[in-house]
Image 1 (tube, rainbow, N blue to C red):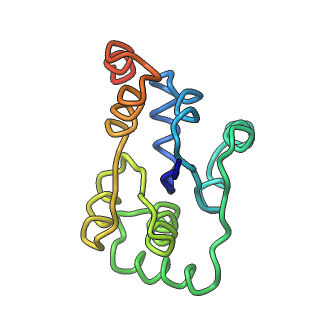
Image 2: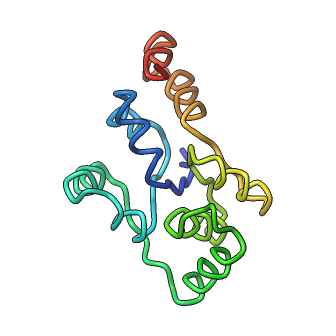
Length: 140
């Protein structure tokens, strides 16, 4: 089975942890990656637990870093860390997973497919990993 490649920002992990479904998403047929910018932004213990679950941090190359800083000049409401995730998703033709509204809007403007926590919860239900009632609880 082919797995989807998902580039994640920092806040999606916090949302999933708060919804008490963090460990369950690794049952989905998806590959979760992030950038070294995002990994460095997380508490060490939180990042180590994500890494142990299989999340990989990609180091951006110099050209990608330059793209991040150029984007940052033109889109100051979006953090450098979030822009690093956008650039990585763009370059890997991956789906960007974020709950950050300015980042999601910018991704859509750049024709980068983007989804949020609702999409993840739907996937957990669709793959029969959790029942709909648990997805509703996770939203609260």
